Length: 215
Image 1 (cartoon, rainbow, N blue to C red):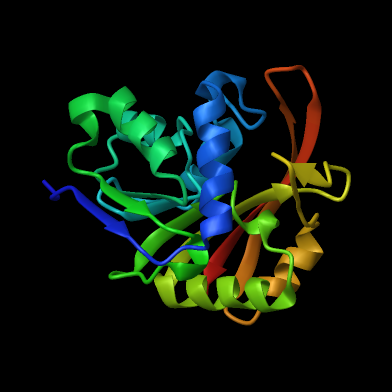
Image 2: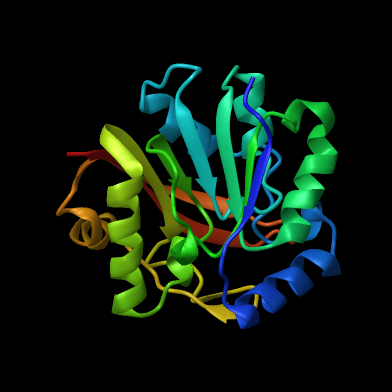
């Protein structure tokens, strides 16, 4: 069993304040990104061919149900990262003792300093909030360092037909070709598909999901 660990890294105070207020304002099922079943993410991770002892990290996890589903499928070595301590505390309460052995990381993703290399990195929430080329490159460099050769990178972002804003913040839209250009130095695109997320308010949001393999 892995010891519970929680690291609080250096973070941008403005971003922290924004996301803390978002998560404190309403329950998880009222957030626009809420999914009772994160099917697209689970499909991509299944295609990675992971064993249940694989090292998996969910970046920008918030209070997503993805970690619940991974635990149900027998995965044991899971890291859960988000900028909001409130969001992670909510997930901890939901999981109860099932979450005691997980790795909980409170951090802005760009400040994250991995202490191990991962077999799979999943992000359906953080990457499309990075607006500058500098931050995008920092993220690409981070995942290159954090994922083992042959490991899996799963990215879900708003597509070119998706929203241009989320939770009061501007985002960047992508298609699979653009994501390939961002990560292509160190990763090979294996699979991509379009996915329509229906928010709790009934709004349709268009996503693109890509699965890359680390060279």
